[in-house]
Structures are given as structure tokens and as C-alpha cells.
Image (cartoon, rainbow, N blue to C red):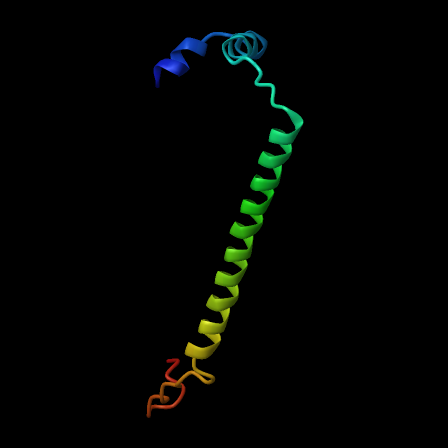
Length: 84
């Protein structure tokens, strides 16, 4: 348990929200800055997901290339079915 957990121990959810809300004042950004940050986050998330898509396709192609078309079969034992 951390000191942050101890600070909120025994308090209700509403009491905890009031404490957190009091310590974190809202930051007001001008519209141009907010739009710039929004576009930057959008572009960066698109880049991350595009990279994940490329990695997934490359992995699938690598598996198709490396996995044999037909797996080798073990020979049957000479004694028949071998069940008994």
C-alpha cells in the first residue's frame, strides 16, 4: 500500500473526488494550442497502429513462409494397431 492509498483509505468516492479536484486545477488552453495537441495525438496514435498493422502482416507472412506445407508423419509400429 502506498501513501496515496492511505490518504484515500476510509473515504467515499465523492469525498475522494473533491480532494483530487481541489488539488488539480483545470488548465485552460487557447483553441489553437488545443487543436495542435489534438492533431498531434491523432497523428501519433495513427502511426502506432499503422506500425502494429505492418508488424502483424509481416509476422503472418513469416509464419506462412516458415511453416512446412505438410508435417512429417511418424511411421506406424510394426505390431499392428498397438491398442492392446
